[in-house]
Amino acid sequence: MNPRFLSIVLTVLGIATPRVHASILTNLGHPRLYFNSNDLPSLRANRFQGTRKIIWRNLAQSADWCLRHDVRRSWIAPVAPDPRYENLYDRFYAIMGDLAITEHLTFAYALSGEARYGEAARQWVLASCRTWQHEADAQPDSGKAYAVSRLLKGVAVGYDTVFDRFTEAERHEIRESVIRITRKYFKEWFSTAEIQGPGYHTHHAIVEWGSLGVVALAFLGEEPDAKQWLDATIKKFEEHLLPSGLALDGAQTEGATFWASTMQYRLFFMDPLRRVTGKDLFQSFGIQMNADLALASVACHKRPGLDEHHANVVLEPSYGQLDYYAPILLFLAREYRRPIFQHLARWDESIGNLQHTRYVTPHGEELLFELGGYAYLWCDDSLPDKANENKLSWLFPSVQEAYARISWKAGALLAGVRKGELVVHAGGQPILIEPGIATNTLPENKILGFTDDGRRVVIRSGSLEIELDRKQEKLLIRRSGLANWQFWSQGEARRDDNQIKWKGGTKLDIRKGKLLDWSPAGYTTVLSVGNGLLPLNDPLQRAYPLATVSPDEAGNIVVEIH
Image 1 (cartoon, rainbow, N blue to C red):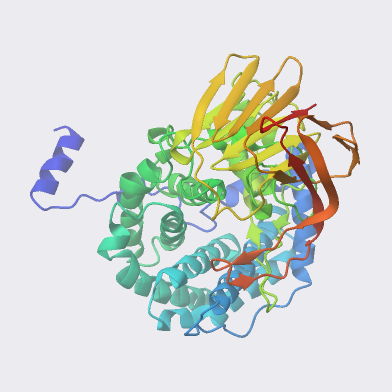
Image 2 (cartoon, rainbow, N blue to C red; image 1 turned 45 degrees about the horizontal axis):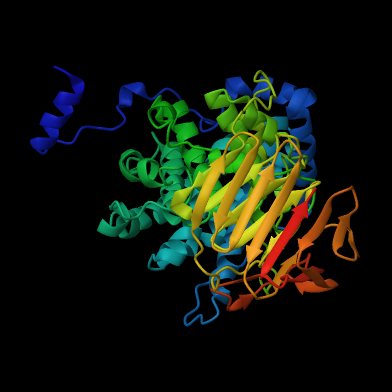
């Protein structure tokens, strides 16, 4: 009998069919998730050659930073009421930071075999369990689940990756802590109709379900409930998270930053799923693993250190720059054999680092991301680094975004438009950003026109028209209306009458209208979370030039950028 027909018959009869049959489990030793013991000799040897040599240098540098930090010993308990979301973000960033350090150290140990990293990783895994074990005592809700799921995933990765460093008593302690919390959340969160339903499929959903899946894979064969957790996760991925997690055009309806995190948590689960069980979701859902948004928005090289908004990925905040994208592109390059992904990923000169951010709560909890170890594991130098894509412009109707670039040369002209926002990147920096970071009060300007004949791209949005001429390597911006227009910029620039010049040769000329004012420190970025209620301690806060342009007598402004 056809297996699919048999499955349907059994379902009709009320007999559930297992999503992962025990006979196809191929890797139940430790480590198992992202590599096994047989992989370690070659992984460690590759630290001294090719792209992995670069990644390892950055990874080790961050691992040494982690060694200088003490483990957390005091739990941050939930507080209510929490009117400014201060407690929520302290807890969230604390868990993110703790487990980023934990995972980074575990990968540093696995990829080098160095005892100093192994001992530190052991201590951080145990401390993460002991400090956050009280999460099993609180009622799950959306705020808790989003953070606690990351805790469980990080500890599971640490348990699997540095398994040989723990005593049997420590392994028992870790299993008991993780399984106790996971059982509670599976019963009281993941098993509810809302969380299992089709409407729960965007960013929070992928983070939480992807994390549950990693826990299930890490403890499969050791915890009887792990099989049930895994089957539920696979079902959720197949029915909701992969078909509906991104829009049909490849965009993320919650914002471009969430495209990256959506892809991260897909890969965190789907990669070990295939290794441990043989179940391959990458081929059956290849269309849904769309990276057009990255192709559209990555602008230039990413230098080490904290980033500014739009620094190397346009229309993205400081924490969503190329270091947030590059590990994904490395995996997709390897999986789908796309040299352009390899090309863009290698623009990240910081690849392998523990990712620091400018998002620091008033109590000093810093948002951290660990992607360095994954970048190392997912790198494949057998794929060439080539900018071999012909497409240079994109329209994403689902989110009213459009992008156009001159070429695949790093730092070439690139423009992005989103619902009233405009960012122009040229010469390796964003030189025109309008109207600023906050977008919640902007008019919902739709994309009214989008054409690309190979030489010229024309994008119309509200009173704005953008024309990119690839042959002449210039960009024209036309605006209509009687109001003055303001934009801010980055990089070293100076005003010369009706022209702005940047160090490096980029020029912006006001062809129609007048540059009324050029204020070198007229714009300041302010970071906040919790719907703007909680200001953050931005370590890179600074002032930027602000330009004010008035229209001509006919109400027109025309700007030309070379």
